[in-house]
Length: 633
Image 1 (cartoon, rainbow, N blue to C red):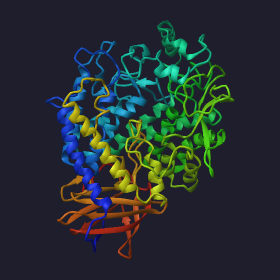
Image 2 (cartoon, rainbow, N blue to C red):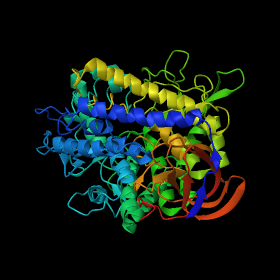
Image 3 (cartoon, rainbow, N blue to C red):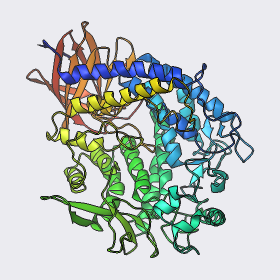
Image 4 (cartoon, rainbow, N blue to C red):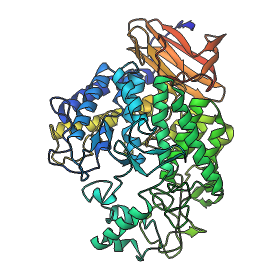
């Protein structure tokens, strides 16, 4: 391990450094208040109520504290990890006591009984973040292996067909794929109410060959029952691209164990979907039957599947190829697999329409959905329309819109560090409505997407104030939640499955970008992918030591620029790791005007009180076997 010592004394820490430490302190105060106000005496959530019967909502509960271990892993107080452990155990216990219409609980053996991987991907972020925070916790390791085993055939649950390399249903879990009954969700859930304006009247019909002429007809409860029948016929069996998020579950188990069967599963399943994509002319199909046939339950059509091209479009379809490719690169080091998500973006871009919305630049609108001809009169704000107001439809493609806040192009570039992938991001830029040198202190989405673009502008030198601005925005959001706690004074009156998620005062995205040079993981099941990670050898734990701030100032194909500052009164030691999982390797390090060979995955940096160190580190990426292992083990 190359050893470095800071020699540059500072009279006053830079604003970003003090702001960063202030945010850590504020988050610590906020999480303690939140845990006291919105959980019971033993850490149990207030939802579901004791008489609740249902299948939906457990993911929303876990989303209410999923990022606490991540903040701990970046240097947050021990309470982030302690509270996350207690809350998770209590939530699982409550889920195991909550009945479903199927005669078994909502949570069986710690895992949801049968859900889709849009929602399972959300809830399992907590599982993955616990791996970063507590890799030596045998309970964490045991869960990782047990959850992955649900898709390896370790037990009696038949979620995966190894012979055909397919997941047997769009909804799977600890009870297998036999409980994918859409009508069981009912109007009580955020996922259900499928005859309501939330889904159909807003997004349009996923199928155009039904007896209905418009989405509004589905507001009739009788028609909703018909819709459940169609769902059961076409969408309750077989594989869908969203199931590629299961590769994160397998990668997580590999990071704990190094067992090659998890790596092999990721490679095997990802390759199966690449073959189906090639068979379908280069477009990933959104449904594959249990026989392996594309369109087996959709009259031979490659579209019309659950969360597919006609259902939610690219926003949902793009999750699987992106997450699977990231995981495959992490495990194998072979970036050729990135052609999988890259090809899908290129297919959409080729069909795009340029619109003049800026005096200098045109904005590219790409199609997000594919479906049969029919009535496309529905609420689609921000979408290109015909002169009569109908949603524009061309050769089966429709909902031409900007790339919005979808992070897939960002993650593709981040994994490849390829100039062409970076240029594609610029081409997808929304010049008409999004300023890249602006930080929104109150993002509209639950996952706060969109700040990746402002962060990229900072890396390009176009937004030098971004570190201070994103930290200020994070503090403002925390304060908003503290004000809400003051107003509510405890358990909220409008209690539902989202109550924790909608009040969680912990915001990690700015810290992730600044300290680790990392984008927000793909929210629906991606792992943290980072340039750097920090450890405190004195306390033998992950994260920055007390009083130490870190800023990744540039990320290039060659390496990274990093500044470390000790804002405290005591000397500190920091271990800097190349990659979140030690998957990268330092080649050279330039600091204080001298360049030295590194040749390892870690640097040992000593920071006397009131000093800073800025270094340029060359990186060779994805050459080491990734692991959650701590540097001193």
